Length: 165
Image 1 (spheres, rainbow, N blue to C red):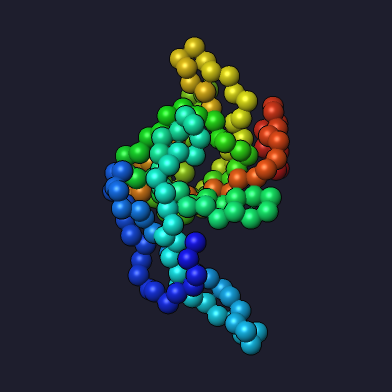
Image 2: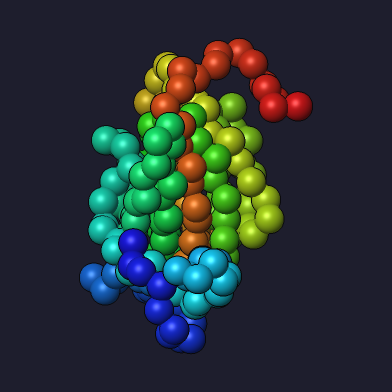
């Protein structure tokens, strides 16, 4: 991602499968060489239109990897609906703006927006008679869904709902 800058512009909007990569604004709290803390308004601009998993439809993704986990920022365009797929790794999904939905194989559909988080751990599902495997997801409403996904290099649990209770 980019180094801190003083830009004050707001995040750009993306339209349905726009070829122009989106940006996401953020505040960076950092320390200078004299030990003084500062805040800079910055933009993440390194987005690629690609799939998060082999069966998933393309979406805008920008990744920042650190030991033990990877933070990925996604922008799902208005009207985007993916194909059925499993989460590639156990992962937290945090909506930053916009709304999105997740529909699981049991037919439950949950819509989420900012402040509503999801832990995706549907690895090892088996395709049903309709060919559905994992989950279906997509945007809801008239603005892109901007998501932060934090993936972990760990073995998923099986048959253990609400393991972080």
